[in-house]
Length: 122
Image: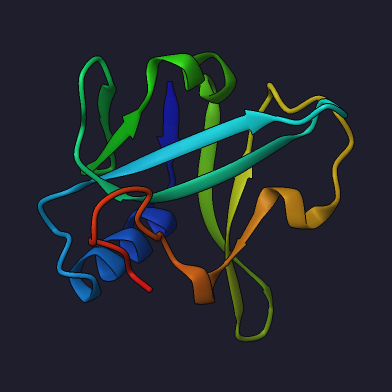
């Protein structure tokens, strides 16, 4: 379903520890805009109801049922764009619409934030 690279997994673990969210999964969400592009969000959260939980690189990923189709086959990576500029990126075969680079990147400064509860890394 979703692949997490070793680099991304390491950064997620660091953010979880800093946020005191080691016991929570990383919720990944996506929505398709009117122009067809996908926009992503992620944050530490507990699984609810019929959420799907998968583990990759030791990271528990939480996905709501309505978003599994959008996220199927996606890879989450953490890369250095320029010296000192690290970001999470979403590589997704389902994102077929041309999008601005900002639509598929998450700056390291905004490492995983909470999508629910008070467990954010902010």
